[in-house]
Figure 1: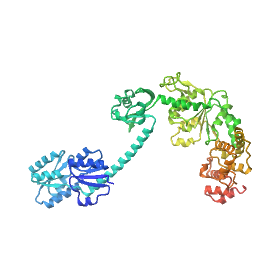
Figure 2: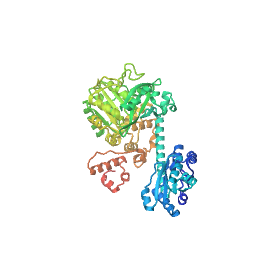
Figure 3: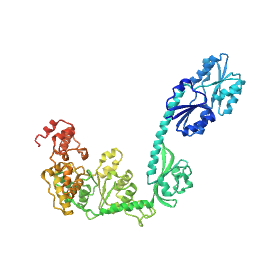
Length: 627
């Protein structure tokens, strides 16, 4: 496909014409004729045009695509002068008629060729004939330039020579054209991506340049404000929405968050900030949402948020298991419960982090006070902030009369459980840090400091040290929440607890569905113990319910009725199994890894060796006393 057009007043040199690459095409034409041709080529998909002199300027004024000025090099000019010297040995004075700001080192050329060479410049076509008359009156016999220069020279009985563009000049121009095409295509892709993202947002987005003229008005802004982008793009924003005051944002270099504004008779919560590039303000942007939309979302999510109430329903007696790891965890949790220090509970998904948090609350001297739980990953940032810290009456249109208590206020004297704290947005992490440090909160839209006495228990299934390295979790907050740490072992780390849990869940769901207690064969029970349970206790409970409902058929489907060599007891990609080892010496960690994988495979020595890609002899020697 042709993407580059070369349009010149004269012909190309034969060698250049015959070696044009596949992506380029040549047309001969000058000035207005060339400009009209360029318009046609732009419509046909040409992306860059190469030309020279006044013709290039005419084309540039006629099209929107880039135009590369390919002027003759000094070597091209020197070749033309040498050709004139050979063809017209009697000629002593030559004039170069150059376009606009093109100049050559004619002093050196004159010295080399022993000729009197002068150069003149023109801007408009009418300047060319005037230059020729001046040249003739000065005694010049030959004038070099474009097609108009040659035509006017012949008209006034002078020798006119067309300045050709050499092969190297064309090659350089083509290379530059391809670079421009690549850059423009990349920019177009980025702009399309950005446009898609902005128009997919539910928030309205308005952006202005440094002059205050609108450069962006996304689809959500059109819908919220009942205004068409075509009516406002390129025009001063102040003429349409003066109370946005983005011109002041640019001038003062300040940002404003969570302001309640009235735009076109619509109340919105707006965030406004200057756009800065290399310490220069190049514009400003405003994002906004309708207040009524925020309130509807808040009301819908609050029902789910408060469905658990403010009471801890579980205690340590509800934690089922008899493994040493679980006993150690419970004993440590009971010790921690007697303090008011912040606790970080870590463990894989489904291990029962909230169960531990509720048990700690029930075992503490705060047991008669509120227990408030919130999942930090379940709410968007704006709603999470209002839920945690509350808001004052009048903070925004439609706000609850008298304001609303945040969860920290509701948890006063009690415990607040921040589940999935690793997913909390960075901006809220900073605010949470201040709450922990100062033991006080300030509602959105408020000015009053509210002291609080709250015990914080945070939980996460993420590695917060890794999140810190990635910049997704604040280091200072990590050390504030990780005062006391509880790690809940995965179910595969305490397989002796699986029969107890199975018995509890089977009794529970047999009673729920009014069915006789399901009895499991010893081999099936052993297979279930050897399974890795990536979803931990939650997966085991769901599986137990499935066993009761299906009258045990799910056991056969999943392969748990098979012998220890069956698929249910081997590692597979579907299990998403992983292990956790304590950082020690390399030799000790190697031992730990082999031991963990050995148990994950159901004590299958061959599978252990295959999984770790080590010698079977190594595994057999290590576990030679095992079956």
